[in-house]
Length: 193
Length: 193
Image (cartoon, rainbow over all chains, first blue to last red):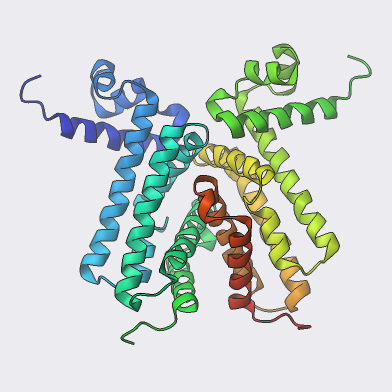
């Protein structure tokens, strides 16, 4: 397998696994099914991911990484864009909704499995740190930044799981408006406003 | 099987299925495993629930019904107790957390499966109607009751999925305080305050 880009193969398999999990559910995401979808043999897929759990873990990291990149793009434009960066985390478009479906599949495993639970907590920390940083840019140092970040993150989580099943009540415009009002209620006007 | 209380058996099986799903995850909740835990033969369990999906559906209804009863108990004491009734829905104690783990397992199936999605939407409607009714008692008729109920329900959902994995940040006292502040921010003082 000289000349094979292993990192790229792992990534392609993870992306396809995320797709299958999001569209068809975790039960459907067998090594055989993923292999067929990505066009590799089951032997190759098993070489990279020895079990279905490893596939799920990598699919989760893949969509979490994609969400991070969406967040980064918003913050690159405006490091204090709280509403925009929260919106980038929310299940407000097809790509995000795919990610949320994978998160839910992952959460289901994170209850009983300590490795999944640890990974989940790690990403919660990442999300909270990043929200806190945007809040700090926009509102300066404040004692309540951590708790405000937790509150906003909880709202993002809750809107997203609702939006997956009740899209009509949670259009992107409605999501933005709720996030905007919540930020204003919790923080008041920006420091430079 | 004369003299057998079928409704009671179905309920017992659903309760045990909910326990196994919450503690060990959906993969563990096989008909064989549930039968062993409840002390029935697999033949009997299969008689009531022909498939694992039927078991999950019934386990979900069981915990959703339990959550409804917790809500009813709060409202029976005080029909306008918004914070108390929201708190009764949230993953703030062991019994609620068990319920939330089953919800998450259920959501994972509700993505690809229309029957699960319809059931899920039905329970969202039930929750929103009940929250709206408590808001109405407390604050009278207002044009924004539905959207406030959706907002509060989203927060309850988000806090709960966070509390499952980050219990330290979301103690019952912290959850109550956030719900209390959110209600006050969205609705102001009660009509009779």
